[in-house]
Structure formats: structure tokens, C-alpha cells
Image 1 (tube, rainbow, N blue to C red):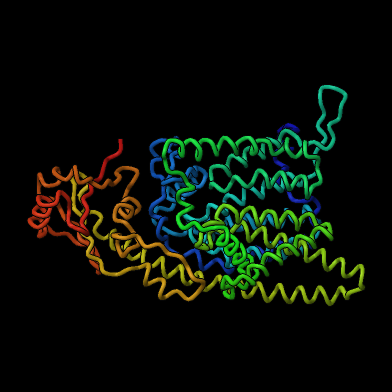
Image 2 (tube, helix red, strand yellow; image 1 turned 135 degrees about the vertical axis):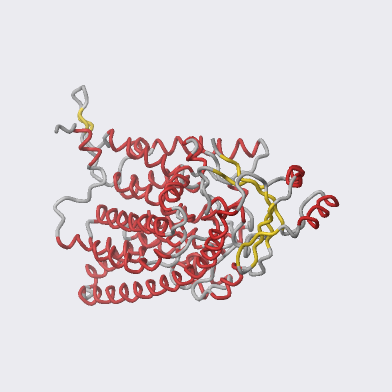
Length: 540
């Protein structure tokens, strides 16, 4: 079968260096170790917004993938989650497996990128290992709905992998050889990956300028060439900002910025947040109290890092530092430090630190005759100890999230017992008499890193709304649940509605509240607190 030259070029874009020697197989044990520490996470049940943000309408029309979820336009992430639900339903294995595979993909891409740029297997392996076992972004790798940043990083690293390959000579119809220019397949690949990133999360906006910086700073390519190959992202950036931020704001409509600015803060708070993150990434977040000297120490350390990178001409370390700072920027004004925000910055942190560390050791060896074997031994011991510590911390986090998942699993299993009896063709009332608060119980029982869990007031055990539960554990491809507005409640009382009651022991049915509910509605025009009216809507 004949394959065109352009097709071969496209398929070869993400190939790792040819003639792989045994040393370059260092990635295999790294991936095996990460798989081993994440295997227990496969049984963690779904939690919180995992039940909320599945876009079931994609089954009705694929165009629904482009609908906003809450304030967010994230078709790529929504499609992946929808496919998970279509295949796995309420079973957690498929969701967790997808999330872990995405993380393994990023570890692989980081290894490949560092090796392709430096040709050093040790630097590539240490960077991949310390990033892959980090517990600082654990929400992303243990919570399916929060994996948007891992999807985004995969798109970005794929772009950098392609750009870091040698530019190809492109023959033209004339007599000129455009040596050193990227081929059409590379431009097309970068454009497609950029579009995929655009549909993943709003902070994709930092990626086109970072890709441009990578080509100019690390690859030492001319600015004109760098602009040419990153042009799709540079063009899409202002269009995206106009459509999703400027026009909605002019029309008075909420945007994603309104969500991210809930807790705000002034310039001092921004500096404190940056300083905390620098302490946190260095393993000293628990010692940060926000004192001015700590902020000064963190910023001074960052300045020293940049100065050393410039002195040693370590372009990769400079890029890593720039990547870290830019990926922190979108959430720097948010006081809370959710670990979901750390995925990209931590990847950049380890790229920068390992690159500069390698340059320092090499310089010391060349200029001072520092014992190379001793330095390698010290590095190996440090990496092993840090990897073991991080891996044990990940295990504690898996235990915590498993506990939180069990609250949700219990609710789903209790609902499935009564699901066949819930009316599909007439309105009904749901009464929540549950007394537990799953979010608070989890916070009190958690043993690992402090976690920010937002309760759902009025939800079952304050963690699941009944409507989200009924869709998730029901059949949303044939019937979807809708909550009746107060203005539509008259139809509810035209008959004798069934009342679905939740108590801590499970769901049950009753009609004994009929008179009290009717009287409350006649007096107040609404249902009593803790009661909601629903109906299932059949889909055509």
C-alpha cells in the first residue's frame, strides 16, 4: 500500500528519537512506578460535580457539545466526560482509568520533550518522575471532573514535542529551498492541537505565547518563523477573548471571569499567593504564614533562579520559569489554593528546577573538578527519597478521596433500590430529611493534605442534588428530570402526587404529607423548605 510523503510526515510528528538505546528505556520503570501508586485510585467513586457537569444533550445532537456548561465553554473536556458516561455509566473504573491515562500521557510527553531538547535521559527521567508522583495537584489526577488541566497540558506538550523536532526542508515549485522552515503537516498539527486546547479550559490563552517563547528561546528560531508556526493560536486568542469575555460583559452577561474572581484580593494578596505557591512547590507550604520576610525570600529566590539561568545560559530553565509564572497567572487573584490549579505550574516547576540543577552540576564539574560520581550519588539519593515521600503522600490522598467517594456511592446505591418505582410520566415531590453533612464529615475524617470541599446546601447529605442524582443514576438518554418552578406547581396538585422521601437510611415513598404540602402551597405559593417538585421529560 502506497503512503504519501505528507502522510508519513504527519504520522512521524510525535515519534520519539530513532534508534532508542537501552538507556532511553528509563521511561518504562517511571511509568510502571506511577501506575503502581495510582492503581488504588481506580476504585475511587465519583464525587460532587462529577454528577453535575455531564452534557447528556450531546446524545441528542452533537452540536450540543458547543453549549456552555454553567459559565464555561469547554467542548473538548465535555466530550471526553460524555464518552466516559456513555461507556461506563455509574461505574467509576472508566472515569478513573481515563484520568490516570491522561496523567501518564503527560509524564511521557514531558520525558520526550526534555530528552528531545537536551538529549539527556537522566534529566528527562528525573523531571518526569518527580512530576508524575507529585501530590500537589492531586485533584486533577483523582477527580474526573477536574482533569481539564491534564487534557490542556497534553495538547500543549504535544505542540512543543512537534516544534522541538528539526524543521524540515520544504521543496517548492521554484528553485528555493526553505531549509529550516516547518512543514505543512507541522502547521496543521499545531493548529489542531491549539483548537483542542481552546475547547478544554479558559487558561489555554497562555499557551500560544508560551509556544512562541519556546520556539524563540529554547529552539533559537527566528521570530518570524516562530510567529508563523504558532499563528493559529495567536489569531484565535483575541477572537476568543472578544466572543467569550468582551461581548458578554458589554451585554451584561456573566463570564468565566465572574466565577474565578469570587474571592479576589489586592496586589499584596497576589504577591502573598505567589510566594505561598513558590514555598508550596518547594515542599514548604506548611511553613508559610504570609510574613513580609517570607514573601521577600520567595521573590528573591525566584529572582536568583532567573539570574543563575541567565548566567549559565540555561534557556530551558528560563522557559520553565516563564511557563510556571504564566500558568499561575490566571488564578493568582483567587485566595483559595485548590490543588487543581497546580497541574501546569508544577510541570513547569520541575522542568525549570531540573534543567537548572543539571546546568549547575555540569558547571561545577567543569570549573571546580567537583566529584562527578559523588554529585550523581547525592542527586540519586535525593530523587529516591523525594519520590518515596511524594508517593506515600499520594496514597494518603487516595485514601481520603476514597472515603469521600463512598458517601456518594451509598447515595447512588440507595437511589437505585427505589428508581423503578419513581414515576416517569407524572410530577412528584421529593422531600429531603437527611441529617448528615457529607462534606463536613469528610473534612473531619481526612488525613492527607487539606482539601477545599464546597457543600451543596439543600442537597442530599449536602453533597448531591436530587435532580443531578436522578439523571446520573437514571436513563438520561430517554428521560431527563426537570424541577418544577413555583408557577407550575398547580399541575402538581391536580392529582395526588407521589412523595419520594430521603432519610439517612435511604429512600422511601409516602402520601402522608399531601394535606400539609397543599396547605403550605395555598399559603405561600411554594413548597415547604426541604421539598422540591420534579417531573421526567421524555426525549424524542
